[in-house]
Length: 582
Image 1 (cartoon, rainbow, N blue to C red):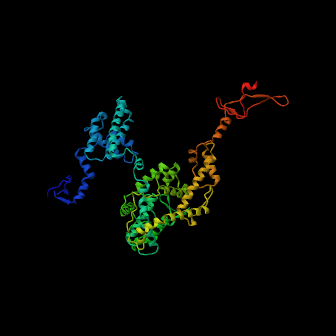
Image 2: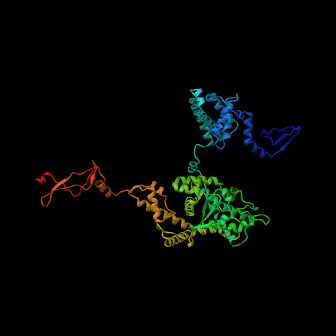
Image 3: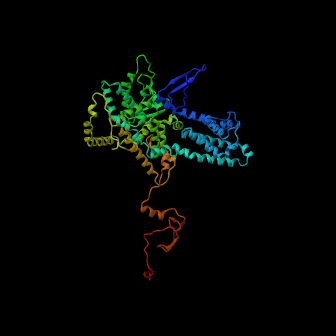
């Protein structure tokens, strides 16, 4: 049987030859073969044919020293291999590396052109250049090379400049001339657009929730969508990692605590807490009571994982759940990694350093978790951070993106999703706003916003009232601290002492934040004039001698001193001309 070469892009067969000379041909679908032809296999085949995989022996002295120099880098072996391949192209013969490559600029350019001809991605070409830059920096630390060639350092600098110049077009091709934060802030997705799925699906999921609450029949497809939505709440609204969500246990859910109107759940393994609103917690509770038991089979053991797949196994595809729910509502897919980057960019542009650190803790970033011991993390700070993130992600639909509600087959929910019901809701919008203002006024009457005021979560008010109340109290406490130290900049210890004396344990500005943002209070025009006369000065007015009522000579010294060339205004002095004195 004739052997079919696998490198031909138009071929739809793969073959392998056995020792006895027989060849087995395995036919693949044409679409699969085309996908393989465009994958990394094609690049590796081209590299092999062009001789770009040739390397120096691994026991070469310079390469072993280079590996020891970068042993702290996770992919140090890949760095050594990249440098070895590039050096072998510049020096085709010999078993050890010669320093002559430092003057071979044309060959260096030719090697990078060969990588492009092999259809290598710009990111991989960039890695080759970075590896070579590290190698040259390592050579500069070897004193024996500088002793043999006095011009060695100059050659290294010239070669580094060459590599940096060749790196620029590759970076531009890779699209890395802007940071991810700049791209996100200058035309990328906003936080509201990333959370649009939660807004679009809310009415449908509320209908399914009511049906489950009433113990009515719900189809398996609707239950699956409800599980997707619960996953989206934790990932898109509270920005938790998919791995942490997949490891969430029933014990962690049953150990949840209510703090200031929010339900706090803690991942015991990561030590990360997030705060759900009352509605979000009700959604997850209904999933736990009405949807999760359907996924537990009689012959399967329940290992205590909170989110289960349809076959009863622990859920391992939360990213796929998000993707399917986005596809169901015909929305662009948003991954956990993407929305976490957007949050980081938004917080960096609009929040203080203290708030940035609190958000990093809330999202479970490793750097923040290592800086803050677990005993210092409180649920009060978790609730405050959750309120901050909720205020950043308020969804406001635009005319360009009308609401899309796909019909579900949930019984008893057709009226809610009908256009007539949507029109009726808009007509009653003004009345609902009036009721909301009255409820807010009643909330303020029961819980006035004061420096030492407190609130209770069991008062029966909406959860966003508590968030708004905390924001008002936070601003009030910040203004109090700023007014207390309006004349001079306080120290961190003084602010911390004042906060301790007030008895504030949470929802207050950080002392470092108060000190760093201190500004002197602006003076009124009257205060400026008084300061011109009564400020601290460098010299005193001349003493004035006068005769008292009993004929004694007395000397009066001014109580204040003034700087040279300072303007002095004395309103009680009357100007008298020489003619008037006679």
